[in-house]
Length: 401
Image (cartoon, rainbow, N blue to C red; front, side, top):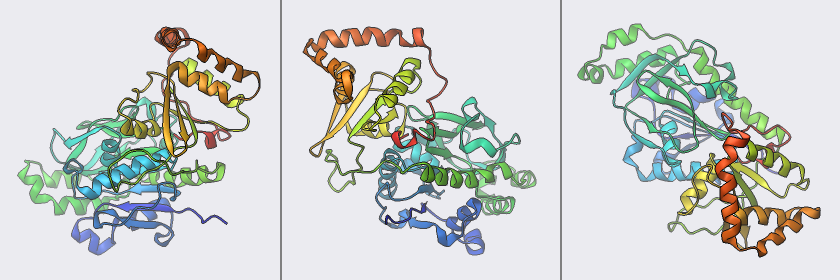
């Protein structure tokens, strides 16, 4: 019998000393917010050198806040960031909080640095973006968009393919999502009003040095039940995904990386498509229907799996540029683009469709010219979606992001 997967809290630091003494480390706050006993979650203190598990092992991952700075690129932080990319490629749900939010963004190709507006602290109002409507994590947030914040650095540029979910007046990238299983939150859903006041008192001197009114910030602190609900909802999503279908299995893969760096594999046959292209969406539905054996896994070019491949292959295309087909053969990873990708997919399908693969006898230059001509007009003819499609429960085992 396979071992039961559990939620993993990756601690990247501790609360300020007075609150650490009173309430303990972040793990307990997060577990309580998810409605889970602290002993029922696994914990790794990555900033103290703890070794991370295989990326497909946890049922889901929560990455905590930290007094460290993501832009410093500390060795343990960089190692954790690479692991997060591999975890997303393996289909593991991820929730990054504050430092975790920034680490996730940077690992996927975004940019993190000091917030131009300076230190951010206290209860702030969140403005939801259109992508938050219908997002599975944000269904219980409600209309009163108040959150607790304390940070110096922010996500200055989102990674390619990320969907902006929310902003504050001083932080335009306050929450984002990548694919269907990864979210970053700059605010702290695990903070209640008492914790927020404790942070403000502890940082009073720093706030005054910055010319901020600590007393006014303290007076404005209120409870933020909508933000707190996101932890419980994340736990529900993890449970729903585990019940709907097993996550894609990980396989060892030889791809060149730095010595000692962990590697995470992708399924044997992975099709990456433009997640906002109307024609591509229809083509994906067709492929699922004509691949009853489930030979192909799928992922959007705007998602985490594509980001992991982009980091490994310098010539990997940008999001939406072309269809990509990735094969694992004999321990190596082969990437096929444009018409080659289409014809290799046909070659793997059952029935008469595989005969279309015989078009490979045509010169590649001719095939790719025709492919590029169609790609240039596909948005105009077939339309462009507002966001990447969300797989149905029946399809989830086939989709990585």
